[in-house]
Image (cartoon, rainbow, N blue to C red):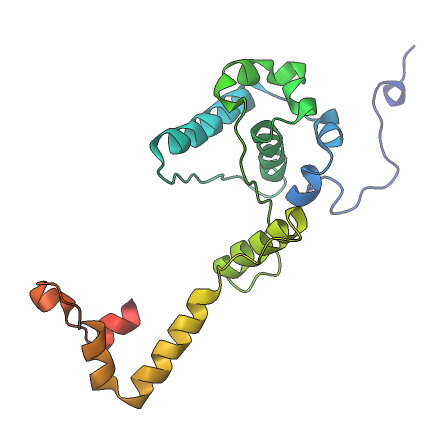
Length: 197
């Protein structure tokens, strides 16, 4: 008689993070990420929709966004890791038999290169901090000799604007609307409008 322990591996101990994949780890080793990944019909459809969304953005040149919703441990990071592998045309993902319908239906990916930035929100001060700091770190890792991406330069501009406003608010607001256009009231700034912007 065959025993259950002969058919499946049951660990003697299970820890909190054992079944949670950190996205940045999942994309480093595609074969390991895919080893125990079960691709259901629902996941095939989700991968296809996600790739079609990216295709639409590439073809139109317009940004697209989507929400990936699921409870803790439902597989969001695994999904994103496998999607990352598909977008980067990773051999282990492209040769995975269960993903063959998605690969075959998205031949447009051949020859495309994407800057894929795996990041997480853990410990982030804000959404901007998470995105920009991890983007900069990822670009530095991929291209150590390239200049640092200029994503934080806007902060200095805003800081200087605030210094100018505090010196002479009326003159500062007049400068904001001081363009040469014929925008009428649209080019006049108030303190409230400036703070909202």
